[in-house]
Length: 391
Image (tube, rainbow, N blue to C red; front, side):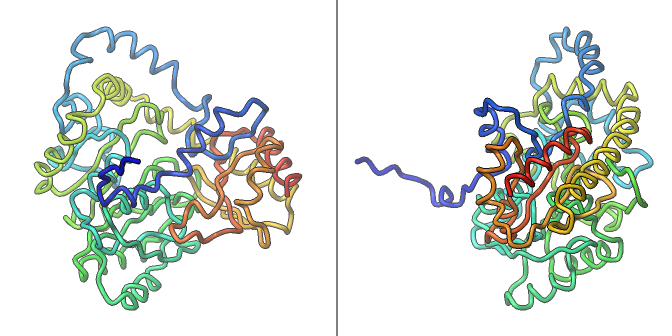
């Protein structure tokens, strides 16, 4: 048998349970209520508007050419205008257009993570973020979260116990994936203070902030840090417009611009040009603001519907988070192994992501993530009923 000359990093390629669920569900032939993927529902995609814009914009040959690696000027201009007045308002020299949020995370780790470096992740955390860090040889340090997001006191204690400083702190500060919690303003300020003391990069992964439907807005980490070079912000249109566009951006210190271009040119030359032009037209036409207003109302109703279904079918057998926006509920089922439960739940027609997927160490065996954004209240009630029956 031939032994292939794998790179050392191959052992660190763990993939994503979440992304793999798409393939799994595609093979099923029975009716399934799909709480697994964190994406807008088909009826939440502005497909009619996008189709009308595409009919004009994508008839132009220039929409199929190469773009500048840092992003097409039309998209950059439209994005800067759409961010004006928000806590993510920025300048042209800080922007790099990416092929979705995942490419932004990859670029951050490519620039700042060496094999053996200590990288802090929330516990639970987004499996895609931890997978990228592992692919670059990081050693992960899980730090717990609570209702106010990352426990910054626990972070300081964990770093002291580790006996070395983290190179990177990876956080999803707003409507966190998977828990739906939001890092409070005092903790954001404290996190920036610690990063400055330690010289640690903060990867600020915030896809959901624009989807707030309740509560009070919290300034972004970028705003709290005042543009500090230690904060590297990753954003995407996957949650606010459509995931298949694979279009996002990073906001980073201007001193990183050429490095980001170099790193990106070793990946894909440029992000998808037709998608960039389509998103540019969507933003420039003022469609995003109207779309977000509609979706916030929809997601508020769907969150309440899912919580009502959990109360009705699971009662005091479960507890769950109560986010002010985003896509997710984090459900805890004491005494239930949610990984072992999954095949029975899928057979009954409901899919979710088991809690272990959100911990590199395999914690949260009695928890699961439900995406409320994809499902109307009546359908959510059916799905939660099937989950209770599987239990």
